Amino acid sequence: MYPFDVISAWSHRQPAVALGLALLIVKIIRSISRMYTLGDLPGPRPQSWLFGHEMEIQTSPAGKLHNQWAETYGPTYKLKGPLGTSYLITGDPKAASHVLHSDNYVRPGDDTISLEQFFGKGLFSAEGKRLWPSGMQMARDSSCVRAIVNPAFTPATVREVSHVIFDLARNLTGSFVDELEREENKSGKIFELTSRIPRLTLDAISMTTFAYDVGNSDQSIPNLIAKISDVPETTGTLIAMSLITLFPSLLYLPNPMKQWTTMLRTELGKIADIVWTQNVEERGLGMHSKLLDSMNDSYKRTGEPLDREQAIATIIGVIFAGYETTANVIIETLYELSRSPNMQTQLRNEIEAFCERTGREPTCDDLVNATQLPFLDAVVRESLRTKAVLTTIAREAVKEDVLALQFPIPGTSRTQIAVKPGQIVLVPVRDGINVDARIWGPDAAIFRPERWLEPGGLPETVKDIHAPGHFLTFGDGAKTCLGRHFAVAEIKVNLSNSIHFALHLTDTQIVLTALIRDLIFEPDDQQYMFYRTGGNTIKPKIIGREHEGPQLYLHIRKVHDY
Ligand code: HEM
Image (cartoon, rainbow, N blue to C red):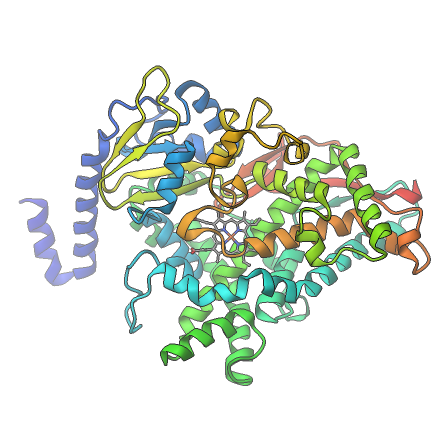
């Protein structure tokens, strides 16, 4: 009996199992046909045929592997996925830009399914012209969904809600100060940051985008954040994560990752549900949530009702997309600054000089304007360049294509790669295009904000990265991060505030003329390494104590107490 006969026999009794089996067989046939694609493209040998390079990628510190491989094979090479399939890796600016801008590439099936499992059927699961799930009348392509929610994320909206971000930043720094002042020993105190900063960014998203104060809700936020950070990292999860690119349907089977995503969705769903009820059912539409307002406005134009399921999924998606990512960048920047007292001093001097010059503190407009506080701007750009949260952007080809390369394959004059439908293409960001010495110069991997301010400007090759800011941290093309203006404003407000806030502490209200003005961040005694976690964000872990999970301790003190 052939497999399809078995399926046909089962299809009468167990249609779901039969359908699953049929899909599996089609997938295996497709993947076998993909095994020898990219045949002559060079690349490192995998440690195992079963998992290809997946295990190595999942377990290595963030930002290391691609750099090493690219040294030997150049920015475009081949890696192995599970069961001998091939991934095309390209950190080549021309090829990456094409992949991210062309309709020939979409988010891979496993990404789309896991995003749907995370958030439900909303903004993130809209892909190309794919139909939205049954029960919803309309087809939504992703550009259409983006247009609906975009008004909630414009620079003007960010400016409008920036007072909330300022307040939250002051609360955070105030909480550090309160604790420092309670200490008898005035030489400072060690603070753990991976639990504090996400709390701030979660509040910021929730209050500005949904007009909902998570901090004053019944939710136990520290508990919620701890649960969200507790991504399972068992061997079983690793194996499942290594195989899902090939078998995205594995995500539907019971597994620790699925339990985690269900928990996440349930917890964030509670917030989303309250936002929906308060904004739509209790007060009527058009109330305070920027996101629901903009969704509602566009639905009004088409005469369609605002759909609860889509709205809740989009709310959950935006909370998750916005809070951990921004928290990661703030944490990593503070970590970097803690190792550079000179940079901290330079930042403080710049902010203080601004206050003296203008007789006021910087507003949101001043902060996002590079010319007002150029060193702050350079620090944030350098952070975004070197601390990209999404290490790699994945796409899947849906049509035949030819990728043109800027950098030929080493040792050859080859500048074109043929791509077949189904080919997974990975654009390495954190340890790829953002820090490639061919593009950024020999000190590309070093955190050096001055590069953004030098009179000669950045190397000409950087302009070949057409993405906003000349780095791929926020992606590029049709799926570029919607919240990037919000993220940059939030990072700048917090950095300037935490660096600057001691001005407010010094006895009088005449903060600007105060002599003593700094919070100083210093390293603790631990050595840290940053890892990509299953939740797809970057988390610091103490070297030798990785099993304890994410943590980062910094020593903080007020300069005038020292
Ligand atoms: C430093 C912080 C952030 C980083 C590094 C970041 C990074 C990214 C990246 C790389 C993508 C594109 C993914 C892809 O191409 O497949 C993305 C998409 C997205 N981001 Fe962000 N993000 C950040 C903050 C935010 C914030 C604060 C918000 C919301 C307020 C947000 C909302 C979104 C949304 C809604 C999308 C989906 C766009 C779509 O699918 O069409 N992000 N982000």
